[in-house]
Image 1 (cartoon, one colour):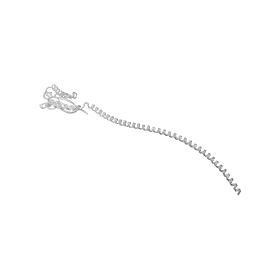
Image 2 (image 1 turned 30 degrees about the vertical axis):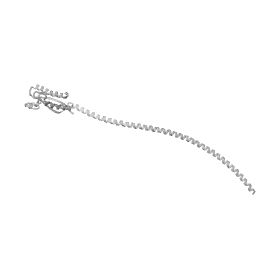
Image 3 (image 1 turned 135 degrees about the horizontal axis):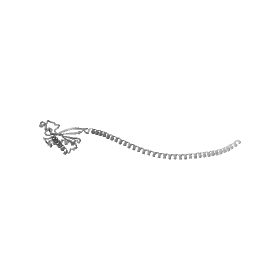
Length: 243
C-alpha cells in the first residue's frame, strides 16, 4: 500500500514535468510557425504588391493602347471618308468624261457629215438642177413689162425670197422680123427689163444671169402671127444647186 502511494506522486511529478515541456515545445513550434507564416505573408504581400504594380502598368499600357487604337480608328474612318469622297469624285469625273466623249463623238460625226457635204458641193459646184421655167411675152418691138408680165415676175420674186439658194437665168428672144443685130439688141433689152424688175424687188444681182439671143431657138412658127407672138419672150429658168 505504501509503495502505491509513493508511485502516484512520482507519476504526477513526471506528468507535470512532461506537461511543462510539451507546452514549451508547443510554444516554440507556434513561434516558429508564426515566423514562417509571417515570412510567407510578407512574401505574399510583396508578390501581391508587385503584381498590383504590374497590373497597374498593364492597365496603363492597355489604356494607352486603347487610346492609340481609338485614334487610329478615327484616322482610318477619316481616311475611308476621304477615299469615298475621292471615289465619288472620280466617278463623277468619269461620267463627265463619258459625256464629253459622247459629245465629241457626235461632233465628229457631224463634222464628217459636213465634210462629206462640202466635198459633194465642191464637186458639184458647177452643176445645177433646173426647177421651174417661167415665160414672159412682149408686144411687137417692145421691151416694157405689162401688168401680166409683172404679175408673173412677182411670183418668181416670192420663190427666190423663200429659197435663198435658187438662182435665175434670163434668156431674151425675138421673132424673126427685122435685122439680126437689131433683134439681138432688142432681146437684150427685154432680158434687162426683167433683170431690173427682179433687182428692184430685192433679188441680189449675183443671183441673176441674163443674155439676149435674138431670133434663134423659136418655140413656134414665125410665119404666123400667133407663132411670132410666142417667140417674143424672155425665158426665166430657176436653178437649185446640185446636192
